[in-house]
Length: 110
Image (tube, rainbow, N blue to C red; front, side, top):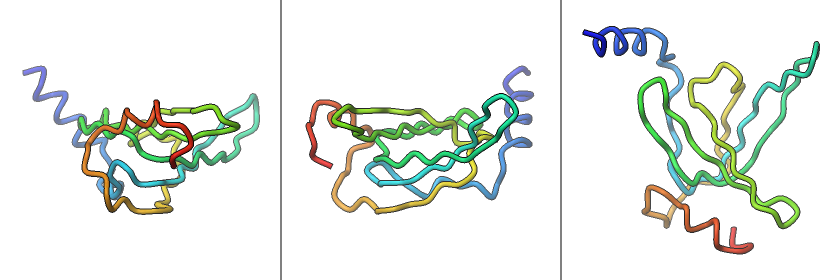
């Protein structure tokens, strides 16, 4: 009974217009709202998708980028109201794995 109620609420709240149209290995740019005291501004995070978890309304993806020689990973909830837009910069052609955690140990390869 509880699962039926949860599934109903998830289906009702998931925006059908937002579809996952990228895969692991793609380089994407996510623009998100940052709220600081009274201000609301847009900030972009550009990186390679290293994992995608599809779990209804709890769907999320992890982006990784290298900034000043230091690797940075960030997890984004796909249906978060803070996400303004998702732009695909470069599509994946060679990678066939679903999780690219091995990129954590690779230095300056992408």
